[in-house]
Image (cartoon, rainbow, N blue to C red; front, top):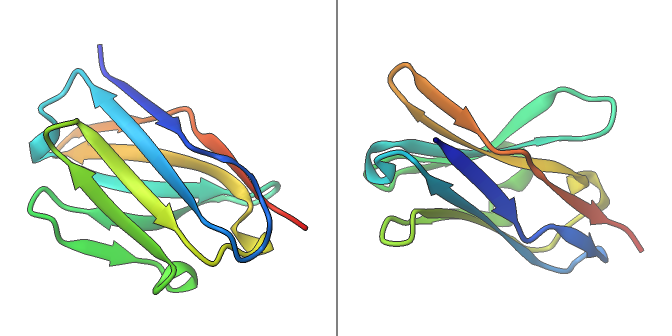
Amino acid sequence: QVQLVESGGGLVQPGESLRLSCLVSGITFRIYKLGWYRQAPGKQRDLVATITSGGSTTYQDPVKDRFTIFRDNAKNTVYLQMNSLKPDDTAVYSCNANFENFNYWGQGTQVTVSS
């Protein structure tokens, strides 16, 4: 059974940092492309960042230079380090694992940025 379990969300003030984790089981983790997505209330789910099996990364413009995606294949975990958080970053953050026709999602973790 494939499972993606996110953790690390919470309530922070603007300017603070959070690190999200996504522990993946049930797949050959190292071959999968991994991604973080977010969905704010009343909005569609948007891509945040991706990392390939080879470690190449991409970021959407709103998070460039603030967020960092990285993976630890030994721990079957993908991370999202989020710095200089803004109220607009408030959303449910979900991780995704993709390889060819295989596509899996976690349940998400809430991130709220508010003073």
